[in-house]
Image (tube, rainbow, N blue to C red; front, side):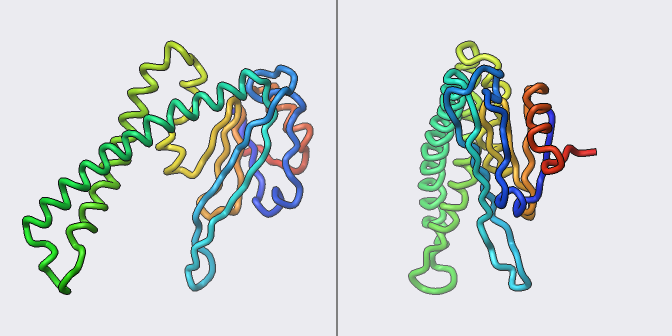
Length: 205
C-alpha cells in the first residue's frame, strides 16, 4: 500500500487529480466509481456533532468498476440480511424476556424499558450477525471473485472505521475529520498520483 494524506479543507478547495487510467489495474479509463467518506465528529466548546463528508470520482476500467460494485454487493447484501434477521430475532426475544421480568414496571408508568433493552441487544447482535453472514458469504464467493474479494475490507470494518474502498484504492477520514488519507494498492498508479499532486498530497515520513 502507498499512502497519501491531505487536510480536508484543502482537499475540498482543490480536488485530488487522479491518473487518466484505471487505479485498479492501469488500463485506459472507461468508467468511474465513487469513493465516499463520512464521519460524525464533535466540534466546538459545546460539543456539537457534525457530519464531515469527502467524495471523489475514481477512474476505472469497466471490469474494475463492475468488480467494485460486485464486491460491495457481496458484502452489503449478506450483512443487511444478517443484521435484520439476527437483530430482529434477538430484539423480540430480549424484549419478551424483559416484559416477563417486569422491567416496564420499574420507574415511570407506561415506560418502554423492555423495548429499549431489546432494541439495544438486537442492535449489538445484529451487527455481529451481519459480520458473520458477510464473512460466510465471502468464503463462498472467494473462488468466483478471487483476489478482489481479499483486498476489500469487510463492510463491518468500513462502517466502524468510517472508511470506503473501490478497486485499487481505499480512503479514510481522521478521527477528528480534519484529514483525508488515500491508500493505493498499485505502486505505479500511486507514483503517478504523487507526480500529479506534487506538493499538495503528502506521503507519510
